[in-house]
Length: 154
Image (tube, rainbow, N blue to C red; front, side, top):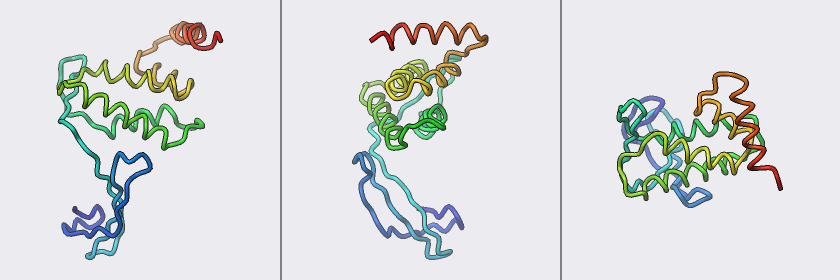
């Protein structure tokens, strides 16, 4: 593994352990060239996934982009980062085990919407406002009204 600080190509693993959810291996590495330490994660990848965007463009699936999107929606909310990681792992597992190598971006968006709805209502609305491309205040009003009607009538 190449050192992210100096580019030296021969780093050493000092410590390996599973993550809390046992979905990855966390490795602490050391660069003998510059003395820096850094962490890497090793995850199982069942298949290469390709995202088919609405315009037909095909791009490689980026797990980090998914994690960033969910983290941005949850920013400044009382959501534990470990829960976000579990949500990301669950979505990736569902996509990889679907049997398809090409996944429509809309399918990923709906999986994220479902996960955020269960995780945090504010994060859900934040993500929906971007994903559904709200243009006016009435779009928010209608969405919140539907959310309140279906979610909080207990």
